[in-house]
Structure formats: structure tokens, C-alpha cells
Amino acid sequence: MSVMVKESPISETDMIAEAEKALADISRIRDGVGRVIFGQENVVERTLVALLAGGHALLVGVPGLAKTKLVETLGVVLGLDSRRVQFTPDLMPSDILGSEVMEQDETGKRSFRFIPGPIFAQLLMADEINRASPRTQSALLQAMQEYHVTIAGARYDLPAPFHVLATQNPLEQEGTYPLPEAQLDRFLMQVDILYPEIEAERRILLETTGIEDAKAQNVLQPARLKEIQTLIRRMPVPESVVEAILTLVRSARPGQGNAETDKHVAWGPGPRASQALMLCTRARALYEGRLAPSVDDVRALAEPVLQHRMALTFAARAEGTSVRDVVAKLVKGI
Picture 1 (spheres, rainbow, N blue to C red):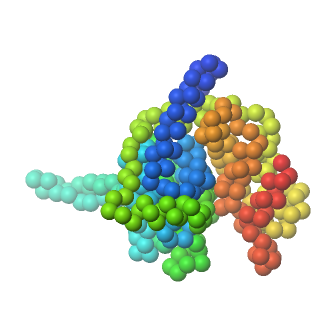
Picture 2 (picture 1 turned 135 degrees about the vertical axis):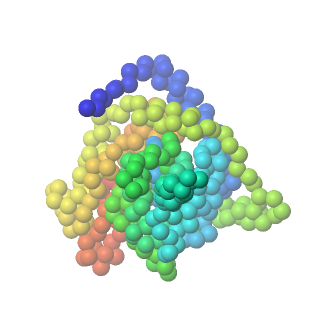
Picture 3 (picture 1 turned 90 degrees about the horizontal axis):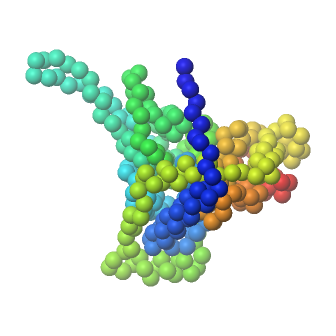
């Protein structure tokens, strides 16, 4: 029998004091990332929001937009034990999770020993995740949701905190596979990375083609990151924000009375999307120096939280409608 233990409530004074400390830490994180990643403020914000909320993020963009560099930089800045797996078509699940090997001792007795794979890290970079087969991609399902893996019937817990930051190339490129829907749903957010603005690209040209490149420096420890994640979960959420989240997510599901959704959406987001929005709005509020989220946070995060949890009908795709178009219309209704 399990017993649920609720944390004692925190006073408003203590909440403000903790939030001020967290804001100072978040500011140092932003500065540390900004020394290496130029421009792309929106991408950095959304990725950090996903980590502060305690979740995983999928970074989508064409090659050469510093997706891998961003993940490496975050690992150093946050002080996380990081591992990188390059996903390729011949990658096997055991290459990620680990495997058992048979050993023989001096007496001739044989036994199996588990050798942990790269997933036993605080930050796993799944580089070009959609270049591996669906069988290999699904090796992450249990780890991303339950924070442990099962090998040969034995349970192995993952380190805490545990985050997966995956990079993905557009599906139109050669050698890519679509991710299983169950795995997409485990990513808190999908962060689309676009081409940089001209001034940011000018700075990239000037500062990355010399003898020395800017190096990331550690500014935080994993234990402190977990404290901030706990603080975010204790932040109050106004009733208006809860209603906005429920209205938005439910309106994105077919059969809920929204004519546009019924016409364009084959299947919509489940309750996990509502949970993701609740956590991300809190994290974004703290990221911007506020003690409680607002409906504007829901609007700002609707696309990255919902777009990978929805599928369009054939008719909608034939008309050239995109998931972003559908989400944008739904956002106007809250």
C-alpha cells in the first residue's frame, strides 16, 4: 500500500524569497547560454522553460542551426552529467539502454552483469532522433515517462534530474523516420528552430570563425535545478489560467463541439497536454520574473505544447492547412 505525502504549504514571504533566488539563478543561466548561442532568444527561452518545468524537449530544424550546440551548452551551464547518442538507422535499443554480459569468475561460476548504457545520465542528447528506426526510438518510452528502465526483468532507476533533449531534422529530408505518436507525447514541448536574424548571423560569422570560440561555463548544480523545479510546481495558478488551459486543450479534440477542429483534426491532445501547459506556464512566468502565470503564457506556449500532439485529417493536409494554423485559430478563442 502506498501513502501520498503532501508538502507543507509555503508562506507568501518564503515564496517571494525563493522566487527571487531562483530569478537570480535563471539570469545567470541565460547569460551563460547567451555567451555561446547568439540570437534565437525564443528558442533558448522555450528550451529552458521545458527544463525548468522538469520535462523533455524536441528541437526541430534543418542542419546547421546549432541545435546540438545548444544542448551541449545547456548541459555545461546547468552542471548536468550529459551523454550524447547519435541516432542512425543501425542503432539498437541496447546501444541506448545497456545490456547484460556473461562473466565467469575464478571458480568457473558464470553470471550476468548489467552494463548501463548512455541513458543513465542527467541529460541525454538524442541527436537526430528521427534517423533511427521506430523500434530503437521506442526504447526511450519507459525512461521518459517513468524515469526507470527494465532490463531482463530488473528495474534500474535513472539519475535525477533526468531530461531528454532530442534534435530532429525535418521529415522531408533523406533518411528520416516519423517518431511514434506515443513518444512524441512524452516531449513536453516541440521547439521549432528557424533561421537566425541577419544581425545574429553577422555575429555568428564574426565570433565563430576565428582562432578561439566562446566556451560555456557552469553556473548551476543539478541539486539547485531540482529545487527550482520544485518551486515551480508550488507556484499558485489563477482559476482563469486553469480554465484557459482546459478550454484550449479540449477545443483541440474532435467531437467536442468545435466545427473547425472536427473538420481539420483527426485526433487531438490528451490530458498530458494539459499537464504540460500547466507546468510550462508556471515555468515561463518565473522565467520572466512573475510569481504566477497568466493567460498570455497559455497563448504563448500553445503551439510548442500542442503541435506535436495533434494530427490533421487527409482533407486538411490536402488543403495545405498546417497544425500551427489550427492551433493559432484555437488560441484566439481563449
